[in-house]
Amino acid sequence: MAFTDNSDLYGAIHEEGINRVLRHVMRQRPSLFNYGTAWVAQKPDERLCERITVAPAVTQRGNPLITVEDPLPLLGTDGMYGINFCFQLTRAEIDFHPGNVFTLPPELAPLAPQRFAFHFRVCAGLGCPPKELIDQLQPALPDPGRPPGTAVGPTKERGQPKPPPVPIPTRKLECFCLDLYAVCHFEVAGPPGDQKLQGKVDGLEIVDIKPDGLENSLECYMNLMVRFVLLPRLSIAIGKFVFDIPNLTSIAIEATPTSAAVPYNPAIEEDQLKVFINVEAAP
Image (cartoon, rainbow, N blue to C red; front, side, top):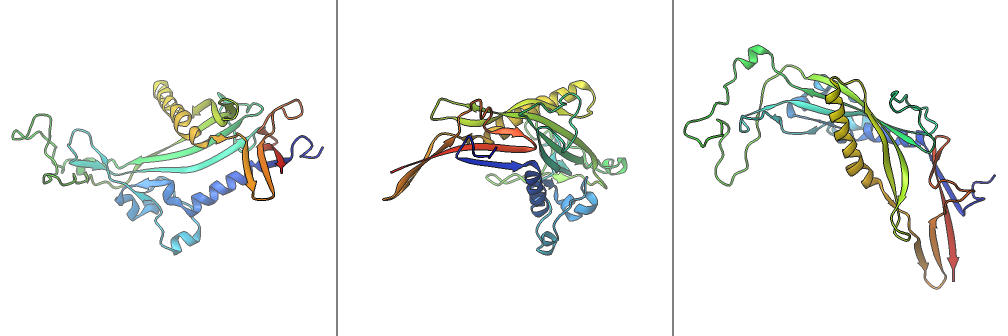
């Protein structure tokens, strides 16, 4: 059967194409996916939790490998001390039904029909200093001459921005990595004429975190992030679009309605995302 037997236009994108683009962007713009303090940025190959794989042109042009952030403030020191850290998104990939790019955890497997899955691997590290360095630091004790609830810390003139915390010296980062998996599907939402194609989360799992309460809390937070931050930004309006060509014609484009011939639009199958579109031309 021809792809356009049930619609005027047909389009599809393979999961490997999307994943290849993701890998390319991560190699070309590593600073979008790697964050850390200036101490980490000085020797990223040695101090990051996972070494960054970049395209040769990135280093030749002298582009930054990571985005530099202020040290993580140590709570209760009124900004006196901060901790060196890094955060990295080291892998991002998508898998369309039937699922063969990566293995889902048992809680989400198998990948159901008309579903797609995400896999993200994130790594983070904290610069915990050795005991001999901790003993040399000045404690951030309350100052009797300052208001209650404040501690000794960097001073600033009135109207001047507060200085960043002083990073506590360290020799290396204490690192950990987490694998996040999510299974989603598409739904059409909204009244006719103002409909949007939205992604919905069917399940989310972070692998091998103990205790269970910590895993459940992190999964709850990430589930809310995906539902209310990531997927809404990926929603697409699917109403009728009309384009006028002066003195010639008017062209209307809209998604092909679902039917027995087109049960899903878009369709997630055969490792692809498929879309069917109708086109009408009028004088």
